[in-house]
Image (cartoon, rainbow, N blue to C red; front, side, top):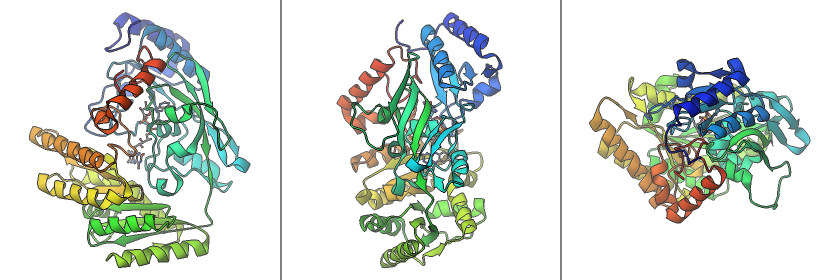
Length: 467
Ligand SMILES: Cc1cc2nc3c(=O)[nH]c(=O)nc-3n(C[C@H](O)[C@H](O)[C@H](O)COP(=O)(O)OP(=O)(O)OC[C@H]3O[C@@H](n4cnc5c(N)ncnc54)[C@H](O)[C@@H]3O)c2cc1C
């Protein structure tokens, strides 16, 4: 069978769907509403619904679905909760979306080893609710209540990554169904392994283009004895970024350090009913002992003061922290509410920390020059920030201006030694930047891996690389 480069023949698709319907009954849906729900893209990427959505409950059922699709040359698109931003779950060639919604069991908690085994449809909030009584938590927090399978597949990170790393640092092992329908296990529960190629890290960040993850073993952390959070205003974004750089370079073990520029603060004030001064602001969190968080907060306060920021207000009461972080997590929805009717394109880039202030400042100047409305918000401790530009999609000139702005943002980040995406991933929308970032040779190596594991190109085709 030739590698898929277009929609499969109607006969092949029909035969595959007939077999899957006979096997999965009501757990296969071809209804328009369900198909559309599995192609929602949240941004300006046009939705491209699959032909059917199927809801397996086990690894073996997932393998059966993939085998049927492989046998008929029908595309498979893995689906978690659909919160990704770059057209990741679109089905440009149609096919079958495999939803992991019913694969939502916490299989085993190994408290003594600080790890947990989960099915991919467990969401991060549900996992943390399950773990709370044991004094444990899973730190990766992309804001949205995403599935752990989806988070592994986009190599997600978010607010806590500056302290605890990203999904690449927190997935110890996986079970996955390859495009052939074969089931493999990668990694394990040992903290370290030098045994052969690191297939876990290959699948983490593969965006479902190399297989469907059906089980994950994740690292856990103990809930810290004390947590302090606070906000610190700055006169300019440069000063806020310089304070971030100084904080990281001084080795202060900050757990979260998030920049909201003055436009994003205005949006958050309106949306979350806060009354923060409308200036660039850092939201911070420290984890440790009672004494430790006091010391860290005091040390950060000094750094901020030296760079013209402050006062640094901090709180240890859980409800104050929750209110603050809820507002931060609603930053995307707050941005959208700034311009009713507009589409928001929440893009992310990441640069080495020493270039952060320069990159954010140059981006602010670009926003002013091009007349784009774009709040900036970012996990700046990692050199990672998001622009959330808002566009009127009925105005072609505005859309063209927006596209040019996004292109310049990526070029700027890559020119500074950074990346076109620190955490959201490539999907459909960022494929065009990969050669500039990695070079032809590395891109060819990615294509060779894709061809080796997915010779028919059925696994989430049209994402990351064209084989
Ligand atoms: C308000 C908001 C804020 C966000 N903030 C952040 C942030 O701070 N940091 C961040 O990293 N992201 C952020 N995101 C983006 C998003 O939450 C992440 O990309 C998340 O990891 C997607 O998970 P999901 O379950 O929704 O995956 P989906 O969107 O369903 O899928 C994402 C990709 O993973 C693949 N996939 C899903 N499940 C599997 C599986 N079991 N096996 C193989 N492939 C699979 C899909 O095919 C697709 O390519 C945010 C999103 C929103 C809406």
